[in-house]
Length: 236
Image (cartoon, helix red, strand yellow):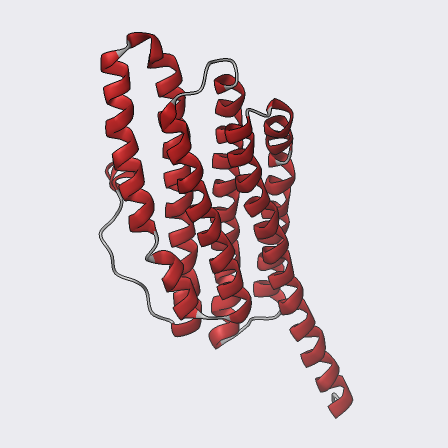
């Protein structure tokens, strides 16, 4: 028959494993947040070397997602967590997937930054860093919310997505005007549109994580209209 000490050891070991899983998520999130920040800075400063560094980090982020998935499967199989711990463990793999996608978009931004560095800058470029600052702040806030299990903080970040969408719509119209007025600007404007879309999608994935944190804490899902990308996926 297991002793009381054995039971305490098992509980302590389990708590340590849960904490270690959270630490992996935070480590991955910190790396992804740095990718976003560096990609925006590479774009703004026309820094090709920094952009290449962001791209190089993508494989490391992918590996972190794979490691988290394996740890989640192991915990579910061996520990059979219940209640909030079950939601925390189950959401870890979904959150890591969103973080991996954010890293992908940061890498794609960096690739466009390398292309844009070959051409003279256009005025609309300065709207994108502002969008990037907002999305980076969203990622930072949801990571804090994840650590603190603070659904309210997560939803505060979630509500900032409308601001990003409005900036994207405004930028889209401005870039279309640039292309119509001066066709020579089309290649540069296409790159800028691509970067802006990547930033907007980073905001969407930050919202996804915020929703998962809300579910993790309250066991309730957020009801909202599906984004166009989701509608396309559902139809496909």
